[in-house]
Length: 154
Length: 274
Image (cartoon, rainbow over all chains, first blue to last red; front, side):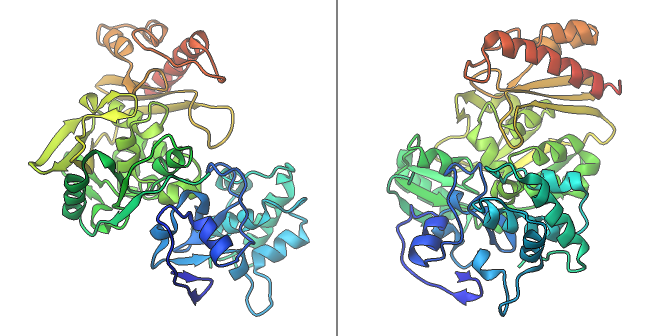
């Protein structure tokens, strides 16, 4: 598979989950594991440009796919507009949900470049913030949408 | 939580998947998007010896106009169903119900065929298929057959699809001008329905219930009452008749009975344009 633009190959047990392959084999630990039950969204990555919960996908299902993790969002040291917006709006408290939120939010804007606040909240329904800091997260996504670049999927 | 070990077969065609099922028998399980099966495997509630991955069968991902019905390939993702212009026009209930499944990341991977084959009484799409009086096309060693939705769900997480068969297509009748409603009651976004109700009013009215028994079910008492001329109040009063609602932390039988009555009333009212 391609991960953050780099071709990666390896042998895994069929039962290896994508999130474990990313974290343990590729050492891309920016993708967090939260609930382990596809509820919380902390493990959200992009597969083929779309948000996916990597705890509910086998690594072998991603064979040949284009995968992007939070580590692949910044380019040449420049934060992705969504990352920038999260920073400026303080769209995080403890930060645990943040990588997943950013991946889900960029996927949302790729499908709906100019969402309403309600659409942002609904679009992020699969991502839980344990600090309940949703207000600034939503603000950040709306700012990224207004930023002219529309967040843009990876 | 990591699934138990299994052997993995990536099917390159529906026929290859059927051959793998024939070869491995009861040990084998089909996986489409995996969004019902992987969670069960992680909890070790399912420990299949062989996974036959049909997730790459893109020729089974389509939404076609079949004349009097819409034909949806079994591998069509929920997001594609939700955003289909054809379905939004011809079978708006189905597009809406697909948008109520899980959350966007789940809908990017989960498939209509997988959800229906899983047959979870608490899931949304089987109830929609029942209310629409749709059907599934099943392929097996003996060729193809069509199973009407009303005969599909046979027991808890069990369907009339044989162990050597697979669902290849879901068919729903076109109902462009029909009244419809989907009522899903849950406490948190993205949760399963504690109780749900789908209704389609197209001349006669068909109502189905979510999470009111071991399988997705038709609200037969409601449908019979409506056919006999009962009004909304009288029909919704019998919503739970003949059902076997589960009991869990979200609600006991009495609570689910009351919820079913309220949701059926709302659904009938909305579907009749009230």
